[in-house]
Image (cartoon, rainbow, N blue to C red; front, top):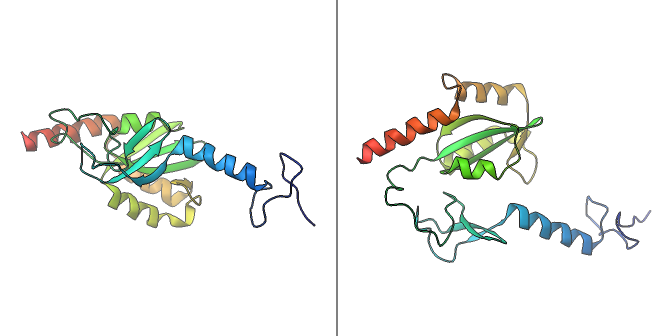
Length: 180
């Protein structure tokens, strides 16, 4: 039985898991790109961390590593106080595992009910966590179904630091002291 697009009378695109014609699939794709960005090479290296990997939004580019907005100069002391973290956010019954050097900016742009924990680490640690919990991953996202193993891990990461923001402040202070 042929299916028709849920939004119009045209045939649904073959092979799509959504009942949408090609036109509506492409419109949905454009909406997702506008909201979540498209990962690509930056036009020039990031002024903050030097990375070439970026995320392009309709409003401009962000570095994919440190999320610095392309075109803005970093503050004079930014490199000395940079701390990469893997963050754990809860939104409804799901948990996001991501990484950033600017949690306040990144997390404010994400739907979430609670900041569960910060773990000091960069994209490599984030990748390890994604592999560790791959069986729970919602395909194509950094969101994971919640289960006991993931909750136990988050509990271990958060142990002794009920406020992740205070922990981040301590890490930034330590980084500034080291670079003095």
